[in-house]
Each structure stands twice: as structure tokens, then as C-alpha cells.
Amino acid sequence: MNLQQLVKMANQIGQFFDVEPDDTLAVQEIHNHLSKFWAPRMRQQLKAALAQGEAGELLPRVQQAVHKLG
Image 1 (cartoon, one colour):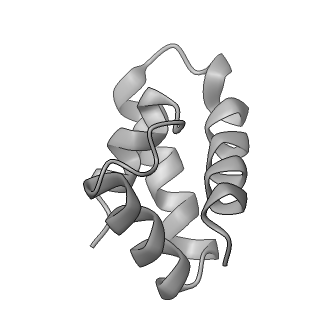
Image 2: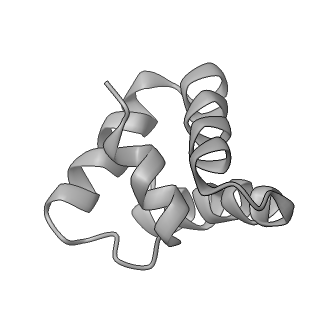
Image 3: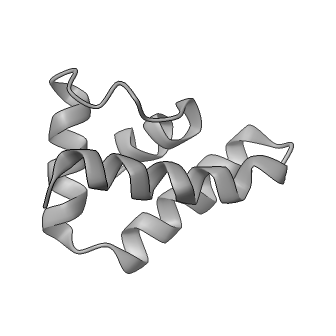
């Protein structure tokens, strides 16, 4: 899948949790959503892109959640 589309979708998930004042809880919920509803290949592509510095547009909470992906 196109990396920009993955980043956009991940950020939309992150924005949904903007109302959550607890960063730890928000990051966990973003992580849970990505783990449950994204295909492994999508998660791996996003995680690899972040590790290589190619997904810098990810929101901070989303970046934290992606780092936690297995």
C-alpha cells in the first residue's frame, strides 16, 4: 500500500484519540486499533518506514503506538 495513505489513515486514528488527555492510554488505544484492524503487512510497512525516517508526518502519539507494534 502507498506509504502516504498509511500515514494518513494512521493519523486519522490518532486524531480520533485527541480527546483522550492521558497520553499513555491514547497510545495504547491507537496500538490496539492498529493491531486488531490492520493487516500485518500494513503494520510492518509503517513500522519500517518510521524506523527509516520515512514516516515523519505521523503524529507523536501514533509514532509511539507504531514503535510498540510487534
